[in-house]
Length: 321
Image 1 (cartoon, rainbow, N blue to C red):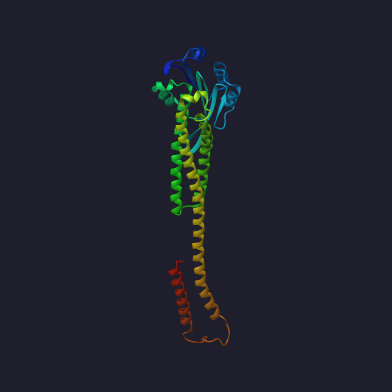
Image 2: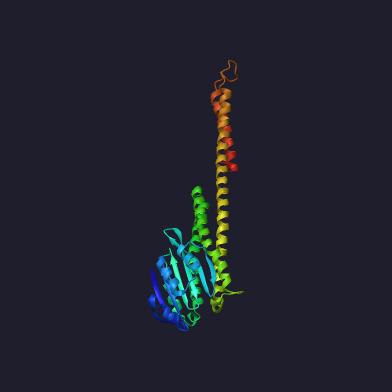
């Protein structure tokens, strides 16, 4: 679906134009066209390929979707793939933003993502001195928007991790805590799969051999890379904290089981005294001592209670009960 098709010259918006007139504006000096598509049909991409002369391999990737974040050069054009990550109903959903760039055009294609980039276009139009730099600045603006949207996601993951840690130390359901930690680990891995390849691709846009389209804005891509490095570092922290939390959770389970075992062992020792004395005095021999003694029964009970009471006191004092 076509979102918008706009022509710019010297950093200023000329007009919203129909697709059929794209070639006319491409022929103008200092003019470039920015087209945005959402979940396009194959026929739309073929039309854009014809208008802009897009490389067939890049168009094929855009048609198939599910590409790894990357940056590819085809002659004097670039093809960039980025992943979007959005929170929907407590789940992380990923989409794609694919950008075709040439000396006088930008084609942005988004798939499976609800958030649009109208704010990016508005920002670019408010900064004509930067938009004047051409397609490279548009790529930066789109990439910067995608990366900035990672921050609320990672903050949400950190909040979830803090809540799970608190529940672990409050003695909540241990099995549920492990399940939540593994669910959080899957979410962080999904975000990492979007960040790490994009970090590698962004590094190619500043320093060293920089594509011609990015030469004027390579300092801006360095800023995007800095953001990605920060996110990557926070993801590393989340990963390490999750691993530690799982180990702590298992240790607490072991400690809890040990406490239960100590209590059971203590009560077993106490009742063993009753069993031993009752078994001794309960034997039916004819000539047993104290068998016919008047005070034999109450004294036997008193001895059993006294010994068990002493054991209970000792276990209680040592923390076993």
